[in-house]
Image 1 (cartoon, one colour):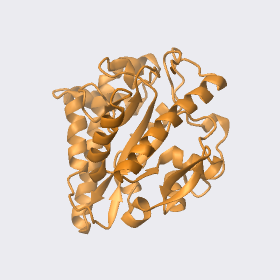
Image 2 (cartoon, rainbow, N blue to C red):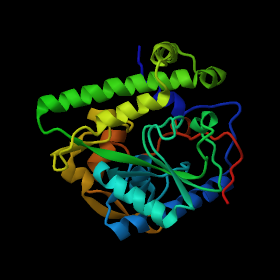
Image 3 (cartoon, rainbow, N blue to C red):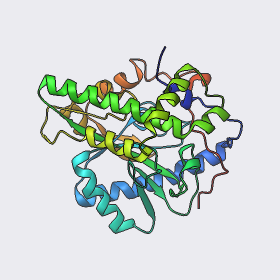
Image 4 (spheres, helix red, strand yellow):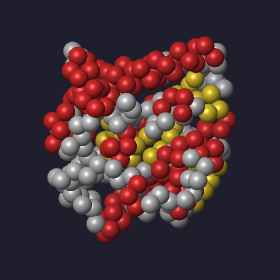
Length: 298
């Protein structure tokens, strides 16, 4: 039995979801670009490096911008630079943006930071159970973690991350169990994860999120040969790459802007999406992000 439920969420067809029109999608993309411009300005001002990640890197390579049906933007950044960037963003734009991080607030259920534009509303699945989170337009920041140079320690670090990530997923699905049943997500993998999540509920979801985050950042060697993004779509070993390949950057066009992507962009996209990543998938296999209210973008 396959235990991954990732694809089920990427193709979720919830009856109570709001259908985003093409006009709304374009307006949402423009709002996201506004956040991106502010983030880049802060990175430049304090000397922090970023690169486009995930579907945003794929969109840059394939479409020179957003994937046409996509509505979000993903960035990658070194873990060591995140605190400095975070402080600078809040100092310059503290009234404009809110930043959420793993386990803070306690009902923030994602394992990576999210920057949200105040005064707007884009209600995702996670927002339905997080009243302390202001559900504004957002971009996601996935952090590159140092990886031990010692092969044995690297395997232990990776296996530990995979184990804690699985436990986090089980606890999260127990937290969301009523919504998942409502949407018909009740297959064997979902039932197993919810059952395990019941026993893990001795600790709040935020504790499991923080524990996984703590484990992922355990390696303090900022000159390690390898880095990874353990909370990315391919997890610890599937996202593993040399520091030179992922942390170094080059410029590429993204929606009329010059944006940074990894030096090893082609290898990165091949790992994530396969060798034919430049070929768009058929409509029935395209990932979609579900929202649960009409959008408010200003």
